[in-house]
Length: 230
Image 1 (cartoon, rainbow, N blue to C red):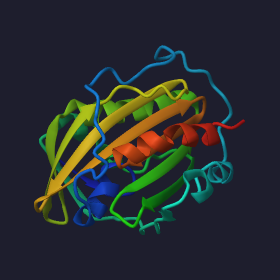
Image 2 (cartoon, helix red, strand yellow):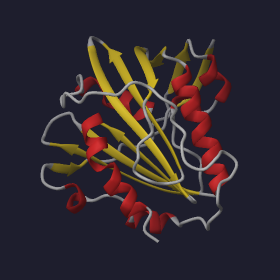
Image 3 (tube, one colour):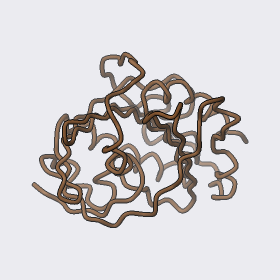
Image 4 (spheres, helix red, strand yellow):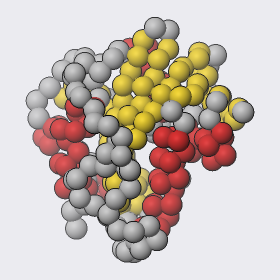
């Protein structure tokens, strides 16, 4: 089954744009065996808090002073509108739209930043979203469930086939009301890129940190502490 969707900025599509310059995870990080990714309050028992404006989210993003030495801001690429074809994953096909490839989520309040590390291909990106707790929980839960529900599939972007494998990771113990985590491997033209993506919902705030597994692990708690400041 195939579905054609427009590429945007989050998750898979961000990696597709970076693939030619990337290689396997340079950190040598070891990854734990899969386990259920949703923890925290029972599904449907979300506590509603007021949404946070985009301007406020912007002020809560990680910056160089939070990360330490060796990090440089990564210029944001213009939004991409090329079609992407997803092959071999009915669960993603059923989602349709940008969600099928982890595209930018359609929440009313959002902010994003990204950094490179040590002059290498290692990167870390942070996305913040805000909406009602229920909408955040429903949307990100469905996307992670679909993406990790297909252990292997293919994405064709601009005529280039990219093999994708995914698996759930143990949910982080960083805090928040709900947590999700996955490990994605993208292979194209003999090059492989390993990306860890972790999402945490805290009330009306959704934090997504993606990039080199070691960098995500290193900065996740700092990102959540700053983003969840009330």
